[in-house]
Image (cartoon, rainbow, N blue to C red; front, side, top):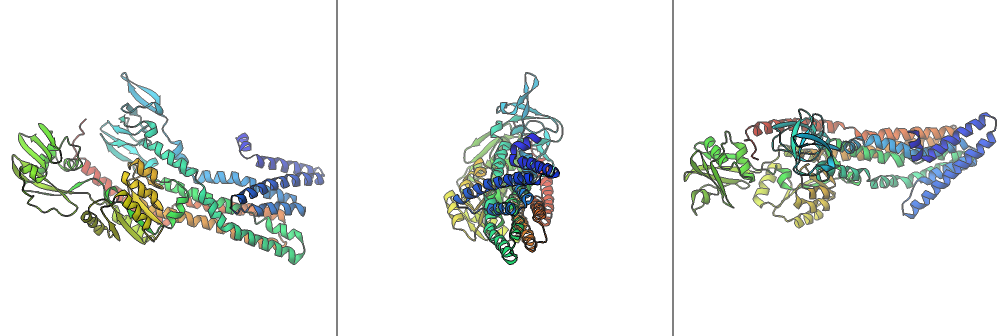
Length: 630
């Protein structure tokens, strides 16, 4: 471990050796030799820092290394060579300290990377063989042992499974999946061994997409430099003014050195990166992958939010809202039996809502019309009115905007009809209310759906503006022209990819969202839950607040120490170590961004209650579904 540290941070090792040599020489009574060696090494490190400062200036960016370089040179010049070495240690050790702090801050991101499945157990020749996860092929039947991860995206073959999806979605409660459901790679099997069929190779599985996003997030550093640069120039000017004034007022050059040793820039350099990484890790813990650290600044300032409708504000899956018949249960059962083999979303909604569904004797789809089947010896037609009644006449009922009517006839007689719609997500009203309370000034719906459908949904949700009938390029234009900025766009489909890329902040919803949307977005919310949007805004605001607070703490303490140093009551050596304590305080404060705020804890409680209610509803609803057909 020591060898690894030395190879990563050689200058820190050199300083430690030089310090040891200096102490030994001083103890032996040879202080002049110690002074020469320590001073020479300190000046060498100052020269290296000066070169880095010049490189920074060539990139048209003002660095704050000039303070550290001046502090080292001035302390050596006045004979405070031990203080110079402490400043050198602070600078060179700052990288090690930053890496350690960022490691603590990015614990959740690291856990995602390290938790990637590596092996799978494939059924073959009547037995089970262990293979590398990269060897899994689509269609392979696999066994997932208890407390192990699903190796690739797969379809559940066992009757049911209890899965921990917290690593993927942030959902703390185990999730019950049933035969035929899709399981995401990385989900932990919480109960008995289960059998699954691979539907994607490892490289194309959901977990690998998350790993790619996390890798991109960890390598993102852009805003850290910008945040420090905003403070660098005024801080540098203040430091030199205080140091120069102390020298001029007393006539002692020692005062100049005593001021600058406590004005080193480590709080500015380290605090912001640690806070940003902690915030990104906090978001990942909640199932929100922020792909670029620069996005956090934009999230914190969001003023307008635009939503796609289908699959974002609504569930994206039709549900029956009304059954009109003299015998609703019988009609629904016959209709569901006729639709038993159909994969059409409307047909699946009818099947899901019915009880005691029977397998039809025969069934035939009629494209764009409906289905005709023999059920319990009766001819059952399900579909458009003209098809089921074999007529050109219009339907005798008026369908409400945003609803679809499916008619049912039995042996040629009209049995009734069902009304279906794409229901609003149960968490959507609360999510919109929450983001409004956080300072979002405007909400807009951007959808390709019909005007009447869009306005019905927007009216129920009190959305400020509605734009319907939009093509993907129309959505891009709308977001580009929209204000006040920054604008955050939420979507989940392939057609949302262009507008997610065009928005100031693009948010892709759901682990099962389209790959195009995930690639184009700045943030991916892994749990298919719109209420996470409010938590995302909270994390962004808190991260920026903590970052600025950490910088403010560092600057404030440094200014106080500079004023004390100007009086001469604090030796340069002591001042250098005091500055180390300031660095530590800044880092500890920056790590607070990894902890949930009071507002987030309150929001989490509301989310959890909503998720439990929804899962109970889904469980009750799913229990009535017929067994999947192979």
